[in-house]
Length: 235
Image 1: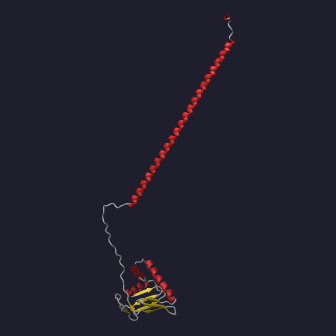
Image 2: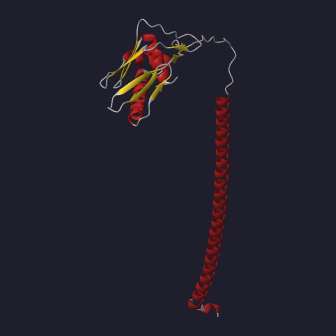
Image 3: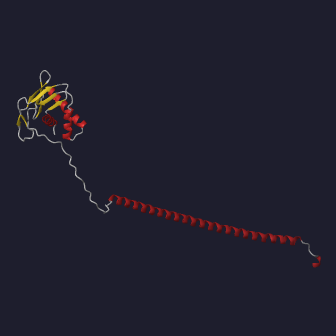
């Protein structure tokens, strides 16, 4: 609902409304203006009076009415009203009148104040403050376990991750086993080769020693035979 509509409705219900730094509109108490008719109602002459007041204060009743009928919090309703008044004062200063349906026209005079011309007819429907309808939510009791799609997806990924970890571990153990086995076989071969070479060397040394011993014994025997004197009795 527009701000000017709320202002007019409040004036008709309260008989008085003040716009800050502008002035006050007053409806005579002995004038009854219908507000629930679907047709336009002719306003009596001088039914609405305007008092110009550049020092007029804030109308708290108007702000409360705006809050009740717009569902806005009070600071926001106050800010909206101030913006409406400030903007229209700027328009009035450049010669553009403020027209409010069901109320009249406000314009600026040559001497700098504001003058008011009452509307000829009124057609304002007062509205009750909107009611917030609340419905009681009845929860259906069920013992069924709700599906857990997200949890199932997470569990599935966890299982896949664990299986992958196990497979990688098994592959690592197999690789470690074959590498150790290969190293062990290579070591045994080296030991056998070394042992065989050592045995061959020992045999060769033994043979050489035997050959040497035999040669030495033969030379020693020949030397003894050459040195021993000839027995004369034998001749």
